[in-house]
Length: 366
Image 1 (cartoon, rainbow, N blue to C red):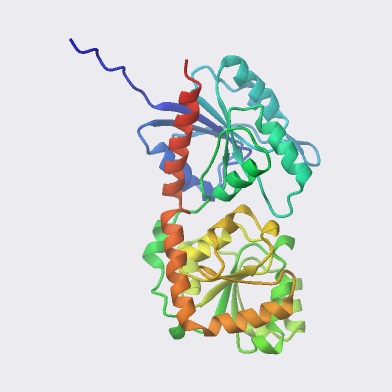
Image 2: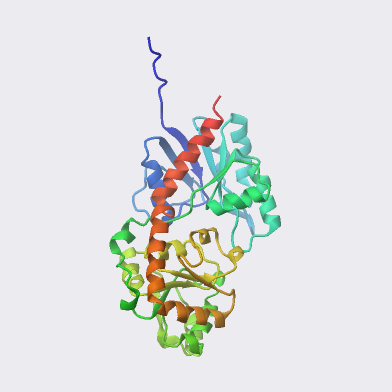
């Protein structure tokens, strides 16, 4: 007589985040939609969602004890009794995580650290401290495959995998236009927040150089009066189209579809994935250590090209040459779309997360 099959149930997974931001919602929705995962996401607040999803568990706001050191008041009291896996944001600055990971270890609940191993300007000391923190848990989940390789090369000992951090591209696919560079204006797109890491002034200086005369720039991002005044002072104000901060793809798509390339002079992050999803070849600086992890979606010559870091003159030359090479742009546009469709999107992320969560949880089963 055959032995009855062992009953199965969904893997009970809790993710603890300081905050649950709008761009993560499709990722969590995709995980929660998998029958093999019973997902709960704990966070201080939920932005960008009117209806509260079943997977969300509200917690009190994260407190700043001193500048750079955080504490989640409810984290140490989180009920871990029925969990198969606890996923913690891999921030060494959140002290309450250390209390929670000790509690999880005592209860035999595996802990999966999720976060960046590399960020723009990461120091060897910062990476050393992260590796030390990881050892308190069971495994690590990084943003990109490149970080898994870097972690191993630096002597990391825990099992590690990656999501290949991306965005929800479903609406973009329906809104983006076919890429025929010669039919579009000689216009580049900047997409992102105009913070210090964006080094936006380098781009304005490049536009002001003779090589880039006639090249226009669409800017999606909140530009203050000082930035606009700087563009005017450099004599490029009439070639910069200021669109402000936009969050709807229905608003972004017509702007992106009227540009030939995406340019980002500073430390690029998810903006590169967003632009590549629209089929825009990428122009970024050549110092990969000064970029965010999402730079791993970029390959020189395949999805775009680079300029010398912090060099407006070289940026101007590369910008002018790139925007005129319609054949190369068409090839790079196709490669960019394909790269995002295969690897850097929320569905692919959810599949990777589910596979790795099950592996980590089952490794700790008696």
